[in-house]
Amino acid sequence: MAKKKSKNKSKGQKQPALSPYRFMREKARTLPVGKCYIAPPDWQESGMAHVIVTRMRPSGSLVMGSFLVDTFCLGVKDAGYHENMTPYDFEQYLDNYKNGMGLEEISYNEAHNIIYGAMAFAEEGGIKPSKEFDPAGYILEEDTDDIPLIEYDFGKNGKHFLVVNPDRKEMPYYHTLKKNLGDDFEYVMPYGEDVDNEDFEEDDKEFPFSDITLNDVKKALDGMLKMKQESDRYPDEKYTYQYPDYPQTLSVKNQFIADELLSPDNYSCLPREVIDRILALPKDEAAQDISNVILYSIGKTYKGINDDTIESWNNSAIMHSLILLAQLQSDKGLDAVLEIMRQTDEFADYHLGDLTPELLHPALYACGKDNITAIEAYLNQPGLDSYLRSQAPDALAMIIFNQPERRGEIINAFRRLLNNMTSNLPVQKACDGTFAGFVMSNLMDIDAKELIPEIKATFATDCVNKTIAGDCKNVIKDIELGRGAIHNDKYQIPDIYEQYESLKKFITKPE
Image (cartoon, rainbow, N blue to C red; front, top):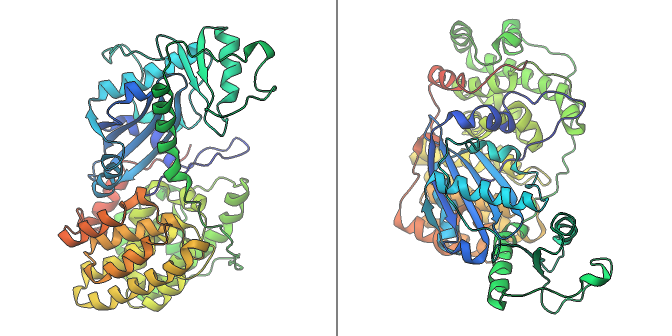
């Protein structure tokens, strides 16, 4: 799946307990380390390394941290993380490196020493790691003597070697290095570029290439550009949703539902007797009350989340609501679920954190499986968040897994979606490259051989983010091989009691 963003809260407020940021800080290091990788394999020659570190969640999903490391000079240039990635999505992520610059599995100790060693070398020149290292760096063990030391050569010929890209974003580092190292470092500008007076002092205009070769410079520049160019091609669709008037007072038929869902005492889990009592009610009646709680909660929090003035929200009403709606399977919950999906990524992050993909599409399937028209209307609504929008194709795929007799109906719905994207991707109307990449993952999961012509036409727009499911050739190859979904659990409604037992391990009540 696509990388989640963390959002800094203003006015000194505490991070919500379910946020990916808090999960990384408090939970990541408690999980066992998984496999680690580096790309490209010749990173010591090119000076650029993409280091990938994983940890294993009890569910079988992975926590992944990725670090763009400049071993010649700058240390950690960029970092990112995904706190809940399926093994299938992770394999697709790795395939992009295997098919591009190459990929090599390494030990955790190697990954640790490359990342921390490059950071320490950069700091000798006064250069701090990218701000994105927090929180991605929490996937790493602390840098103590418990980790065996591996000696790597950083820099070029023992010196810091600064490569300035054509966009000149690295220029400030020259002055930092000059201040801390004097003349004891090397640097290059892109060939054919002139140097402005404000970039260098008058006596600094001679480029000290010494033993640096043209091939060294080319490899370093190529390494940087390959890492950046694919992700930079796919901006998100602009969010323009016009919010309706949400209810300012909460009206429910069964008051105990509102009381229990909104209770701070039930932050991590609903008591079993409460779950049983809610599920014993007529499904439509319970779903309507839960929907009213959702709309009320949205109205109380969306503005503060959007402008960073949110007051403490000490309940998990929206989380509980989605879990219950998935069990009730009543269409009375559909409008409320879709309204959650019309909110911002920050809204989902605040209320659901890394549980967003686990909770949203099962609830949408349960409430909307008999109203494909409403789901398609949502998919065709412009100006929404791509990550939340991607939960709708997940729900459509879920119908095929649970009601295989409806395959033709759902294939036609995906066909309409692909045909719309072929026209709308270039202008980012009700879709963008990231969303298109997620859709391709769904089509691979359902072995959508019927849609290969439409898949080719969608990729022909050159607007599909290939870092999510791969390029056209790989997507079609996977579909033709009929591999299906690696983890069918994604497309099933979980047992509610087992689900809460699992969630309690990761959810802590705010202080």
